[in-house]
Length: 236
Image (cartoon, rainbow, N blue to C red; front, side):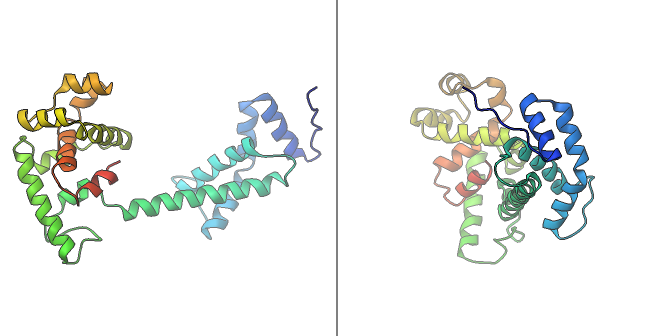
């Protein structure tokens, strides 16, 4: 027999139970709207400052976290608002970790656009690693010329959308492990499109819009450019 759940005495928790049981989107949205002041206070508490509701990543995360809390709340474990505040705190920490990681990473595009005297951090100091990196980029540039690709082409044609870039890098990694296709790329100085489409279950449209980027990634992965491989990972 199904276990009957008694209705919570707290009016807020009764609203939440109705939302969870009925799936009523309007009731959910009304609850979130009613508790926007609470969300603002919870976010401001974590930031230790007043927040604006417009154009604020943190406020948007707070709204999403409050909605998540509705779904995950267990009536047997404390008050809902205490739980919601904890979820908001955790999601804000996730956001800050993501932003810090993005600030630490240097993209392949940043690297290629930098001149030898103007490398981005953490390569601003002249040291052996920087000298090796500069030499590696020069060799990489010379290798790309054989394929009719310049560094400027690569910067322009690097996929800007993160998912598209990640898919292109993953495809490049798979291609770089295929000895026969790699040999054909180096021999004919172009991608064997039909073979790649058939073997890796992708489409011509996806490959064509990232052709130069994929070739460049294969060159990095197979040409002994060890330092540049870190930028391949960051390109994901």
